[in-house]
Image (cartoon, rainbow, N blue to C red; front, side, top):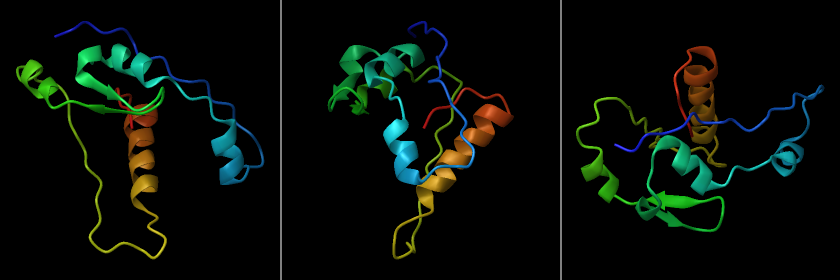
Length: 109
């Protein structure tokens, strides 16, 4: 397996009172997906880039990492969506925050 360097989180600036969702989204500093992939040990040829901030990971990574014992994949799904479709993303982000910030696991969403 490729050695990886520590994942460097993007800086978080807390604001009070909590701004509107759109203000939060527009003020976010995005990390290039190629940088994140390098930090977590994904090889460039295992990525299919969709611009600088989105990518799909090719299934060939499964063969390369088949003997790596650590790692879990959590899939948050729903069978009865709400009219606006809310819930899954909020649950996913909350779960990542709990596992990473509160329990100290290395996670990304």
